[in-house]
Length: 311
Length: 311
Image (cartoon, rainbow over the protein chains, first blue to last red):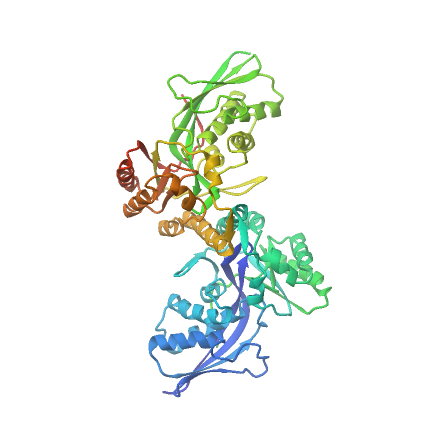
């Protein structure tokens, strides 16, 4: 076998979309990472450091989401070959933007391309979920599913996965501000409230249901009214200096809702044009900069492609 | 002022649509009651017994939902006139099919017609909600809203009401079996679990969100997968002899989900044709009849009209 190589990109994802805690996510046109995968004759999986990139991801084969996903895929195929994975993170891990999911998706996607596509995208989800579980300790599809399929995904159920890809309004824009520090998903989960009242359940399900209706009806005002979350925001906002000020700035600048992406610290806001998305980003950055921390702002439509092969 | 009279009909409603506890309801083409409203010069509200109808509704002006709604409406208009209301219940109260909501809706609807429509339907909702609160002790719109507007309604928020009228698949049919005994809404609420885990919240909101997506996409298989409820069914099924057998019979007969309507004892099942709805009704009745209780079966499309003036 000759050495074969492919370079792919996977995109960042926003999960826990307001009231959609653990059940919703969408992809954005922001590159989360670039990955080069090489096939080798000599069996074994290797995760390589990427030159010029701070290797803030685990190189350990049990912890690295790409390695775990690749291992599952090779074992499923009964293939005893070598796979070398070189990752160039474009977003710092621990961002709330699905960095570990991007690796979990990019690796089986790339390997599937190299092998002549023995699997459908839907098949790949299972390997990606196994990979993601290595990072988070449990099966979570709210980053992996939108990263793999693109679009806005509702995850009704995990076992077996029941994913609903929603029609996305063409003019739905997302502004993301990413303060440059890391929050561990496992830590961010520990601080969530454990018990909820009957009223809490109906409020959360009322808002999550209405958010789906708002997206499907392209009713941005309804999306805005629905963007209330009882689970993540009240607890995790404490981990992000100035969160409520940044949110207020986004809403005052015209955002249709603004809250934490995933475990944070990234914060996202929705809007209906690129121009407004940029104005909102400017307003958020102005407030966040006052906290003397480096911030990166992204403005994007919803990504519809999933991972892509690079030139 | 001459005596003026009007006869109206209001329709039955299914609330707590599976995972849509307290946030969803739809109307069916099943007459819940006929109401005759008379205007009189002599001030005062009277609820009259209807000849040939078992008066199982309260005649007390503080408890009768029609009387409370009429009182609020007259007081809002500053009108000091007499209103006589005669109700002919077509469904036994305590059915889970929105009997009290039908009175709360029919009365202000009829009075508005008699007065030359000073209010929009949206205005009438507030009077109907006040009326319904007289019966249930709290503001609940999951019967009142679909009864007034027709269709499938998502109630995101009660205060102020934020109602989302969903596009309903044209071939969505509902089968209802109504075992002829009563369950008190207040009693049925007491037996609900008070505390829910984080997992419960995500499961319920995942299913409620997916149900909305299923209805809007006309995806009946998704509707079926989403019809899981953690709140009402596990507790209230104990009040309905043979509930799980009846449900199983409906699902085996091809229903896209089957659960308790409102507080019960009525049970509803969804299907995609009148023929299937009748087959499902037959299967449900066969099981329920074995419990030696009289059962009435209704088969209907979703009602889209709201209350109507009768000829």
